[in-house]
Length: 212
Image (tube, rainbow, N blue to C red; front, side, top):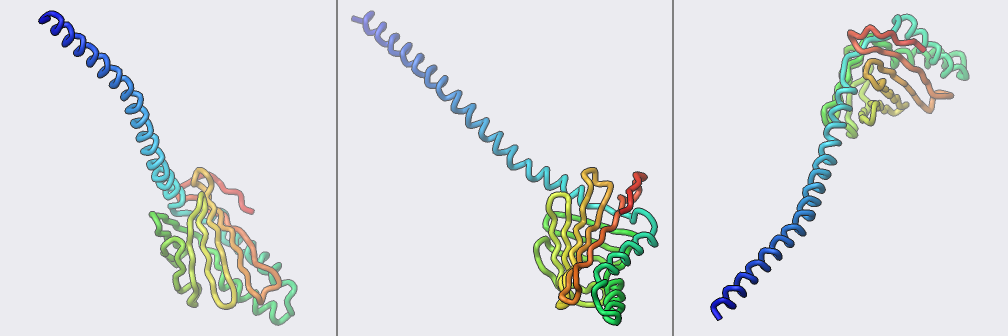
């Protein structure tokens, strides 16, 4: 009887050991799967932060006008002439002068994107806002509403006044060396929108930028 009891206990211990091993084997795949899911989630959470950092670096820098000031101003004047071409003789001259005043060409542009804050310095005028928030600022001598946002490789800047709206899209090249300003100004007083582009290159860059 003692021998039988000893064997029974041994058999029970052996069975328990096998069951425990099997349970551990079953838990291992589950643990591995949970670990893999945790790693995947962590990578997914880190990716937007990394991409946001890369985007902020691309959209931040100091840029200089590509080509001569005279050529850039001539391009703006040509665009103004097209915008006012269908106006009367007297009003055409007044409108053209006002458009030149509101569309100066500056030799330098500085941009900075940090989180939700966007800062743009065009010549000696600096505009700093929270992305997506309208803010009252003074631009070219008058109070206007300003909205700035960033998306992809571009910064969007819109000035809104009672008599019109001016939007500048700051488009950065993929390598961050070139910057194109696409400007559109609309007003109920203009027969058609004023549209023109200006080319800039990152300060210190020797890479030439073809002028439009």
